Length: 195
Length: 127
Ligand SMILES: Nc1nc2c(ncn2[C@@H]2O[C@H](COP(=O)(O)OP(=O)(O)OP(=O)(O)O)[C@@H](O)[C@H]2O)c(=O)[nH]1
Ligand SMILES: [Mg+2]
Image (cartoon, rainbow over all chains, first blue to last red; front, side):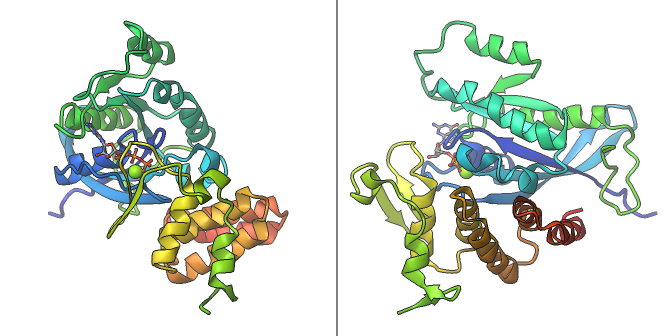
């Protein structure tokens, strides 16, 4: 019997520069962390293989999450949006717990991605939880931000690993639950979202 | 003199607009590392500065070239953007997002056939 064909999902990392997008992928895929900052230029693609429970009850499915780590440069965002966001099925909207302005910036990132990829599942990650929060955050402000947009969210730390695996698991399960069927398509890349 | 895309290399690189305060070198505590630029504070330097730095280290740095193409287009020089992007696609015909970006740039110039054919290549490379 041949092995089940994996389901392939394109997931985009969104958020301003230095919020920790690359570090979160590195933590999740390699279980590594580096304090040095190397600015991402363009995009880097990483595959994360996951085994997740099929939310439609068909047992475990193998998922190849194709993670697009996109540079946090708002000035080039709209010019490059088709290049980067076409075919995306999920968004990690990453903010930095130590910089309040990175939270509000998520709206513009999500808008740009959704203008290309449609109304796809979005999970907020408030990263750098290991550091003291920006004192400009009012109590309850982060919760209210995500609640207003209807995006589930969680705190993460790429440095300690807190929340990272849970975040990937939650987004992938939400995407799978949204898909019409988990039956992989003939190309072997899994079913496509209807366009 | 080294040449790059048919131009003196530094002419191409210096065509990336760099704000004056950065040119004077006082804005960010930049330090070079083997992997690229490090900043001591968590602040990203201007993308044009990073591109220029990486291309000075390696004129064929494909990520920097891709972003250089975007910077040209963003500055209004879409034709130069396409020239640089074509170079990227010669170096790596499967560079992520490059064919779709090429389609975008041709559309900006009203070049419908070129746009369509770039989009078809994108569908073949990144279905
Ligand atoms: N303390 C702490 N530092 C972090 C965390 N995540 C990332 N960093 C640091 O923050 C800096 C920026 O992280 P990156 O992952 O490169 O940020 P990015 O969002 O990919 O940035 P761009 O590529 O410029 O868009 C690096 O120095 C990281 O080491 C975290 O959870 N905790
Ligand atoms: Mg990065």
